[in-house]
Amino acid sequence: MSLYMLQFAYTPQAWAALTKTPANRSEGLGKLAQQLGGKLVGLYYCHGEYDGVALLEAPDDTTATAVVLAAVAPGHLKANRTTKLFTPEEVMEAMRKAGSASYQAPS
Image (cartoon, rainbow, N blue to C red; front, side, top):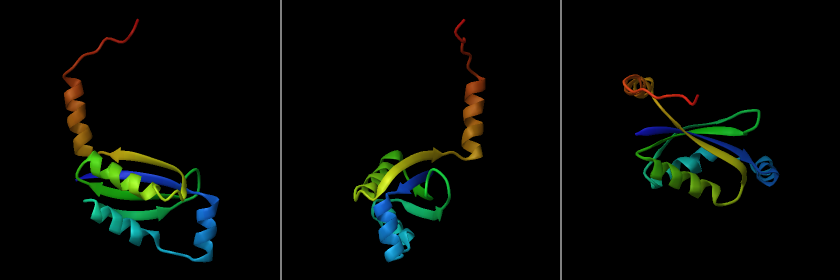
């Protein structure tokens, strides 16, 4: 399973609805992820450009994309970003592969 970081920002209307009726959004997102073949690892809120971050495990990019598309479809987000995360072992393997190749920079 691969790990994905989903960053999101709510619309003002979504924040208004959540402040009127607070809800644990991780429950619904977890069910959605499971329904589509993934697993919600965690949901966290933060300050800054994005309002929150979710960590999603999925067997492939297609499953992760399906979770994201289903999650944003209701229109309550004004921004979202999905980043595939790599383990140190995966990056070390990529480094070994890259180290065996050569590439000429433009001159």
